Length: 276
Image 1 (spheres, rainbow, N blue to C red):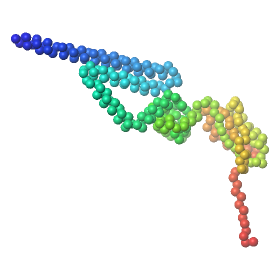
Image 2: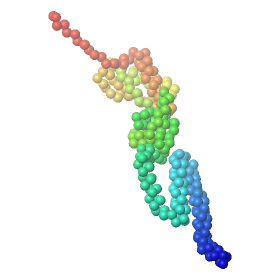
Image 3: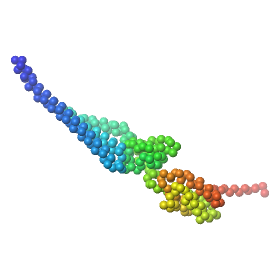
Image 4: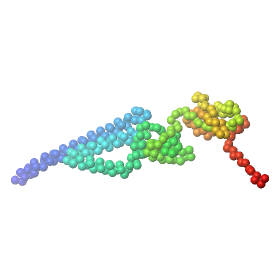
């Protein structure tokens, strides 16, 4: 009699045990396959950046990680579904949680979005001198949230990417050859051709100024008390600031040596003697 009862109990729970064992086995298979697919997707996205030098590796590593987490999220939902868990409510809960996190991190998300755009379009790269968000410096690092600049006096400036992407960006290192604009004024009584020759002699003797493109030295403006020259020599980008801060002094000394007057504002004072 006891053996009959035991057979009945085994026959009653055996299908359920087999079902659970099957679900556990399938869940393990789904997890293993899902993990393999997630890693494969991530590695494929990263390899895309390695095949193309112009694509940023940081961005594609981030996108690869995001793709991996998305695949694993679907794998987790499929596993829970095998055990009869209502996944619709879980998806709704995850959606609500994502919305709450997105609202809480709105500023960070805007920096992230701007960082993605900067890494895709690459208006500048590490090593470039840029002017952006009211700051100027050498780009030392670009990540998904910030751009780090180093100033001439060795200050580190960390600028949020959203401030850079939403504003004008001037990349001083984009072109290999740069023109250096400078302005010099001479008195109206001086000879323009003589002044131009003095300026050209300084430019032609400078070791870092290129002969091609040819330097531009012409009268730009006739001011109230001076004739103003626009002087634009060309140089390699690495010598831009050296020329900008050395040539004006050299031209000033050359003009003085040739007795060419550089005018400065004068004020005429008339004294009236009312005692007479």
